Amino acid sequence: MKKNDKVKFYESKMNSSLESNMSYLNDMLAVDENFDLVYRVIEIGGKKACMYFIDGFCKDDMMQKLLQYFIAIKPEEMPETAHEMSKAFMPTVEVDLKSEWKEIEKFILSGVFALFVDGFDTCILIDARTYPSRSVSEPEKDKTMRGSKDGFVETLVFNTALIRRRIRSNDLRMEIVSAGKSSKTDIVLCYMETRVDKEFLQKIRKRISEIKVDSLTMNQESLAECLYQRAWINPFPKFKFTERPDTASAQILEGNIIILVDNSPSAMIAPTSIFDVVEEADDYYFPPVTGSYLRLARFLIALLTFFLTPTFLLLMMYPQWIPSSFEFIMLKESPNIPIIWQFLMLELAIDGLRLAAVNTPSMLSTPFSVMAALVFGEFSVKSGWFSSEVMLYMVFVTIANYTQASYELAYAMKFMRIIALVLTAIFGVYGYIAGVGFFLLAIVNNKTISGQSYIYPLLPLNLKQLGKRLLRLRLTEARK
Image (cartoon, rainbow, N blue to C red; front, top):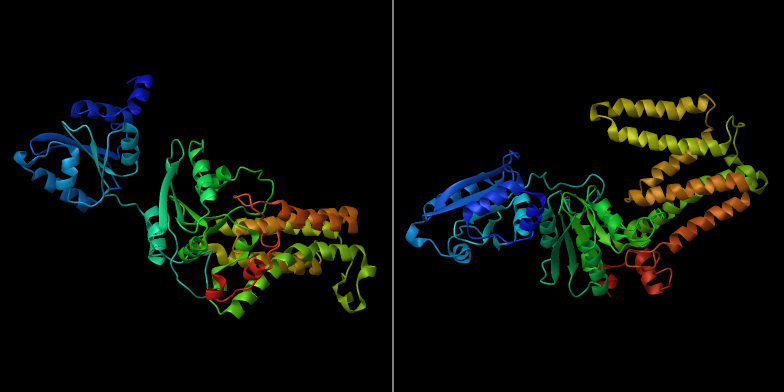
């Protein structure tokens, strides 16, 4: 079949001739070249029929039962149309009818069982598929000290079921769309019909429909870059990602939209502000006093990761500003390498260790940890490369970064910290002020995907809502 003929066929509908339909479909799907695309010609009620499916997606026991049922149909029982057959002769629940080749191809490549019968101008699609998936276990990143221990997996249907299990309301909507010319990746928008911002929801739908990419190669990250149409130079996260169904369900009940992408074990939360990024599930699995303390501590530690090293560098440049009671923070020995270069080398070295840890086999993780501790904890100081005080503050900053569940926020703080360090080293106190000002400007000028303020309810100021975001109130009070 020529290319132009394929395009015309692809945009047309099937006819009632089984031979013609099989010829077109075999050529379009390249059945002879793809070993996992299986088709089988059978006879149903005296009529010739053919079924198409992908090996590995269809359940063998279900396929066997369907074949036994179809072969047992007598000629006098055979209906005249696909609609009648789907109603009275389908021993399964999920059945659909399609006549457009574009839709039929999409369903077959998604793993749906397709049945063509001679004389029928409609394809019968039977959803008897099963996707390879891992067990629903607690995610490695979003662990909590209390609460449920289940987590999202790479299978979309399982993820929606985990949310349905928690929200048993007819107000919950699970709207499926797709994106990607080649991948045709399934995307589900989860929201509460009476609580969601309808204008924002329509904006999300429109942006997904206008995505012009060949595939969502990196799943959610590819989708996020397509949805956020403003400049990405600002490093602060535009979305919050979670692998916890309880966190996703709570966000849905608050009126936000959860975006699930097939093949991804995490959910995107939109819109997202800085207060949403800092929140964690543990805030709500403890009493209000404890939850409030954890949240405020997380905010304070996040600020310390930015201010600690630039402030130390500034004080080393102006030692006369150090109060006598804090003179112990002074360097005990003159550094062989300027402090600014020590900080920058350690920032890079820590990221190198992090990348090495990710790629280190589990059997070598213990010797790797011992070697890294010796090299950076003792030998690097004794050799004169780094000062012990610089090492101390960088270790605190590194460990403090792990108090944030969001990798994106941790790296945003890192980039802001490096800029502040460089400006302080070059321009002194004016550089320090410029670094802090740049940090504040980056947060204030950032916008959520809905176009709202990134730091609302701090700007514009709403004291009542600000109290709710900073403090963990009782759940009955928080809903008011």
